[in-house]
Length: 447
Ligand SMILES: [Zn+2]
Image 1 (cartoon, rainbow, N blue to C red):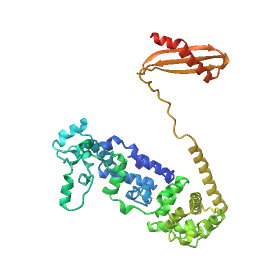
Image 2: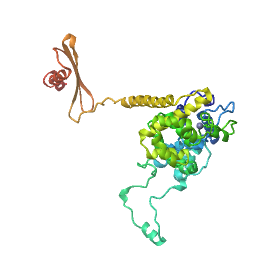
Image 3: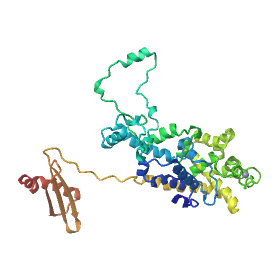
Image 4: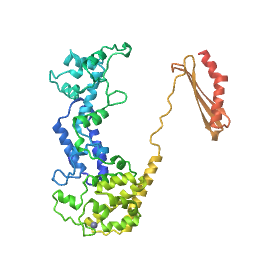
């Protein structure tokens, strides 16, 4: 596939996130909603995208995939990245076809399938029978037909249950029908099937979830690359020297800045004496000190900060952490000694620039307001639409008007050019006077 040829080297992880999220949209939805993609193909696609996400070059076998796709496919509020589980998504798409068969038995497609595959029963109880690819695919969406729940449950002795079932039901309620219990309007949606049923119940992922204030992290008003950076650090995916050693990379574990301690997330982003100067210079040390003293790990510190300090402050804090990582990398790869003042200034400038762009984007209209739709007048009425155009240099104005009946049918139209100098609103008012007291209504009556 084309994905294998892509290189994410020149993109930030936030940029790669956009790319990775876009890949499923490139796979034809029609195919996925009609045929079940094989698990092996789904896993191969996931492997390729996982390599792209972590910046690995699969051809040369280099790079570290810090987390499996299953962990990345966990929703963001549970510590994952919310990437798509392809097989599960294909099942959710197919379930929509199954929902149509189950909820609308009178539709032509439902009648055709019923006649062919389950003439004596209903879709949710149909068995394989003849093996036909499309039917087999749609039937795969019957993931848990036995798991359907009754509308109510009665607990007690059998005699009471029998008595309850004898109560006649009001016939005005209509026939029983299938509902989708995971949505408010009882109707099926691919999103609810994928997130709340398949990923929660079928592909059991509770053991992959990581507790924490993830929602607060993803809501921070900072560049996306900074959020992804903090997520990596908290999930233990930041390539500090100690982490690299655990992945089998042969390197020293000593911090490149102070040359005196082992480099892990805590030391690199918080406790390194070289970076302590930056924290104090930025004026944040007093803000985070209490939490630093009481936290027992880096992820604990981040979640404590998210819970206890203001959003504005935490945004500045995580921005500075991102710049401290940039400073450490500068020392390793370019042998650059960036002073604390340069480091703090970069953090401030990055956040200020991003804030300016973001505010401008927010202040821009998010969507075009659609033009008003023409509405038919009530029965026995006619509607006249009128517009005026003022030609100031010629000291004239034009009027155009169109009359239509209650069915929207054209009756008559007229345009006139009038000598004089008026404002557009005044010209339109004059136009309505023309409609009522002059030619057009009379002409209509004649028509
Ligand atoms: Zn250090």
